[in-house]
Amino acid sequence: MRLILLGPPGAGKGTQAKLLFDRFKIPHISTGDILRDEMRENSDLGQKVAKFVKNGELVPDEIVVEVVTKRLSKPDAQDGFILDGFPRTVNQAEALNQALRKQGIAIDLVLYFETSAEICIKRLSERRICDKCAAIFHLTNMPPKKEGICDYCGGKLYLRDDDRPETVKRRLEVYQNQTASLIDYYKNSGKLRQVDGDLEANKLNSQLLETFAQESLTG
Ligand code: AMP
Image 1 (cartoon, rainbow, N blue to C red):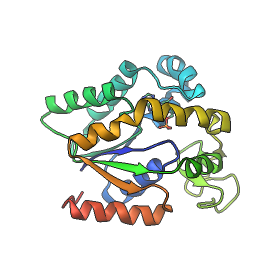
Image 2: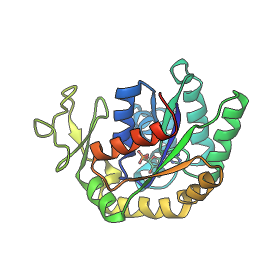
Image 3: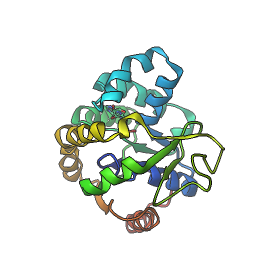
C-alpha cells in the first residue's frame, strides 16, 4: 500500500500513520521527523533546514525531494509506505510522481484529513512528543500514563518549538498558501479520498480502514 496523508498541521496525520504502521507494518515516512532528527544531530542538512523548520516555513523543495527519494530507495519502502507531510507543494508532488514512475510504481491513495483550524490549534498546543522514539501524546485526548514521560520507551516528552502559538499560526497560513492546492491536484488524478480529521483518533482510524476496504486495499 502506497499512501499519502494530506492535511493541515494538527490534522492527526502522524498519529494515524503510527496506527497504520502498527496494523500493516508499512513504514511511516515523515519528512518533519527526518528533518528534526537531522537538526538534533546538528548535521549539515540539519543546520541547513533549521531556520525554516523553527519559523514554520517550508524547507526548499529540492532539499526535501532529495531527502524523500533517498528514504524511498531503502529496502523497507519497496513494498509500500505512508508519506506524512510530503508532498507539501505541487512541485514536490510532480517530483514524487517522476521518481515513482521511474520505478514503475504509483501512489494508491491520498487521504485528505479535512480538519477545522480550531481543532488543529488545540491539538498542536497540547501535543507532546517523545524525544527518543517520537511517539505522540496529547494532554487531554491521549495523555501519557506518567506526566512528561513516554509510555513506550521512557523518553522525555516535549512541546515542539514550532507548536507554540505564534508559529502554529504561520504554519496554518503556509498550509493554506502552498499546500492546500494539492487537494485539487490529487482530486483531478482520482486518488483523493476525504476523511474527517476532526474525529478522535480511534474513530478516524476506523474511517481510514473503511476507506481501504472500499478500495480493496489490504496492506
Ligand atoms: P511536520 O512535522 O510535518 O509538521 O513538519 C515540520 C516542519 O518541517 C514544517 O513546518 C517544515 O518546516 C518542514 N517540512 C516537513 N515536511 C516538509 C515538506 N514536505 N516540504 C517543506 N518543508 C517540510
